[in-house]
Length: 232
Image (cartoon, rainbow, N blue to C red; front, side, top):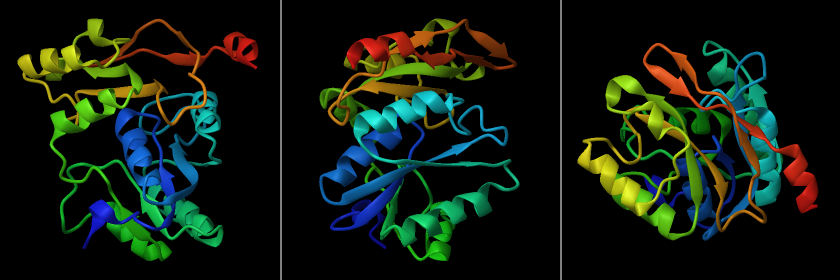
């Protein structure tokens, strides 16, 4: 298997959460292959993304700024695999040869994305697979991407004060000193990318009031429509 280079020379669709890992994987895959679209999974009501709890309007704005069509599916966890596989089969009909994901640590055997791509007749590309976590974040930052923390797990060393912070090299060192994975791969935090080399224009956002739910705290983001209109 050559998942790390699985997008090389391929026409691909990318699994897209709007967070740093999926954006970096997309960026790297676009250096060696041709992207034809993005896939984002939503909660069953279709009001928030399944992975990061983002409103669809914000994900659409990211896709529009990147210049790629967005394909969405709304599903419960029980229906997730069948809906996702259906989107992959549609992507294949549109010309996709591979799926690109931002995974770093999936197992070599029993990988869920490997199973669903095979079921859809696609190859799998994971440009970040087995990359050192700190190195991946530093590369993301050095490329000029800007991302904001929107979810934190308070039981894993994160604080409410981390919400809304932008990942910088100094912040990465702070997280490491606190014993926190700077990629958040243990579920410590999630991010939303608002600017960078893939984006034709920054994503204008408005920050809501922090929401707390058990061990988690969330910073709701909304698309700043007025700012978007000023950019046009």
